[in-house]
Length: 112
Length: 116
Image (cartoon, rainbow over all chains, first blue to last red; front, top):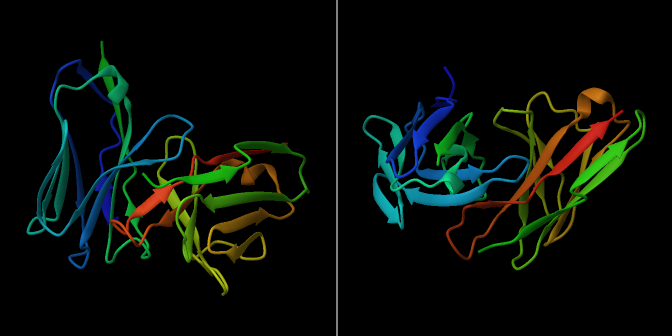
């Protein structure tokens, strides 16, 4: 079993839709959870960062962590064509100086 | 936000040559940096952890003599792909944690290596 599982997609949605992206992880020791956005041929860009369980909102983006089920989610409201990218979840035991485990990434396409 | 740069952004070289990739943290100091490799449509694979002032820590299966890492200062880490072969062609990305903020990792823009 992989430490982090993520559906690779692709996921196609119409503009304005609410997008739900999800990952599961296996290690209950993981405390830090991140979502990165990666455009083609570019480095990943940090979108959301959460510690332990709960929700975090930033503009159109909401990250949720449910440690009891080892499930992390990213919601994108009012999706735009510019949101089309690959979204990577990541998790780790400690803060940034610790190794992160990345999901395979979900390719999202928002259709105009 | 934090800025991490990489140079070069892309490089094409002949088989057997060595290629050096630089990773710099531009507005913060990073005692630790990470080097990743990414194949098309695949996720990031951690290659090694670069530590300022000490030897790098390599992940299982990564040849340390093949991928030389030097963390020369608090803002610079270099990855040298020695005697590159076509199978080394990939997208190499570095990241650095910023401890004075969220202490999470910020990534460079990546370096695309093509070995002919």
